Length: 134
Image (tube, rainbow, N blue to C red; front, top):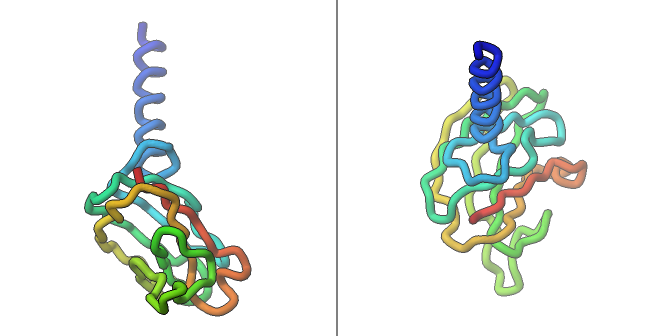
């Protein structure tokens, strides 16, 4: 009996940790993101459409990094769409060794949104992620 209870509690805690970090397929409203040289960890997460999202950012890298959520349909590296409108939906920067907690409202339109570090050379080196809006 004790082993069953222990195993059940362990699995419940593990599942909550994975969801809180954005690693699961279920939408979350709090996300922890580490920005390391040329990558985001995690590199994909799912949020509910139109919800207020809290994002805890940590820059463990040696350089300044940005996390830029792009508008739906924008491609990595695109600064403007065909009509000349900015492709940035939301952006925040964090200096090396610093952390920030910010909130933003998730897009109301479901879909796959590109996230990138907008600094020259960073997104080209693979510092990209995906945000799924459901």
